[in-house]
Amino acid sequence: MSNSSMALNNKGVEGLNKKLTWGIIAVFIFMVGDGVEQAFLSKYLVDLGFTVGEAALVFSVYGITLTIASWLAGVLSEMFGPRRVMLAGLLIWVVFHIGLLTFGLEAKNYGIILLMYGFRGFGYPLFALSFYVWIAKVVPNKRLGTIMGWFWFAYAGGLGFIGAYYPSFSIPKLGYMGTLWSALVFIILGGILGVLMVKSGARQNLQESTNSEKGKLKSFLKAITIVYENPKIGVVGLLRTINTTAQYGFVVVLPLYFTSVIGFTISQWLIIWGSMSAINMFFCVIWGYVGDRFGRRFVITWFGCVGSAITTLLFYYLPLAFGEVFWVAIMVSMLYGVTLAAFCPLGALVPGLESKNTGAAMSILNLGAGLSTFIGPSIVGLIGGENVQAVMWTFACLYIVGAFLSIYLKANREESINTEKEIIAG
Image: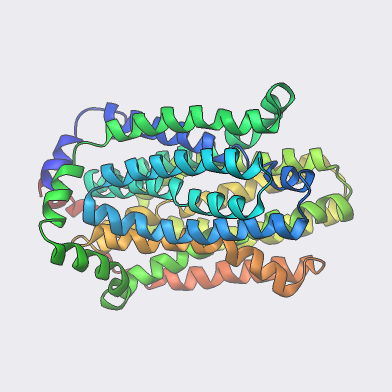
């Protein structure tokens, strides 16, 4: 690791040198393309004549493949090197997106839509999360939280902010299909740029991990057994699941709550939710920096877990108390975005907890991210979307559980920032 770390350890803003800067820009551009259809694909499917249930199944299949791919990103990066996995993710996304548009949507073939959109779900995790694994491998540990904060800034900014708002401008001019075709421009541009940036570290990782088929199998199995060999990695994965479980549940239950109960219009709700995404982007960077300086576990426990528990309840009770007061809804949404971002230092904990099998450990972190995409909506479904209060208390309690879990991570190497000259020197 030392050669890779030193290769990236040149002058820059908190370690964000030219190669990392362009790589993070590449992730941002790629995620814009991946987020283009989020705001309208379900509506477009219904407009094509499919039922709401059929549209929901499309997203369920996509969520399953996305979860699998999130786990595989760390495993395959360990086996073949992040650069090759990123290239595979780019190619998968492009091929299956073209298939989705040409043979699925234009032909109104539901089976092909399920197949193509499902397989396309492997694309962005293999690209973006392999870059995330690469960051964990090559960035000096004392700067890792800050750099990972920038990664999540790009990820959230592309997928949840720009990617969601871009269609509001493109659909009136290009239509639904034209907008979907235009996503390829972002994907190809960001994808090629990202693959070109990931050179240092990928080749070394490839040589170390793939000298034999036995070595590949060992790397694959390690991504399964590591949670038993190092239970703290399992805890990190659980915390990552808790991190965004509520967020994915909110998008199911809160639109109806804010429009039908509180009285906002759907346009106002979109602004409220968009404000959360916007502030979340910036605080990903801020919390990464704070974690590097004052302790990553401290940030995750108090601002991430406890903070999100409080803001989750505020998300329900403040609008209920104040009614249709727009600035109050905006404020509480932004407060949740701030605390949600405080989980960003989780990724920076991993190399200190598992320095020998970083890729395998990161695969568990990525798996947690994928699991939250359907655990959140599932909780809403089990409790019932009409019982908003119970849903919000359930999510708040999950965050409190996360706070207690984080105590288990106290005695880890992330707290010993003063000793990290040893890590940088290799």
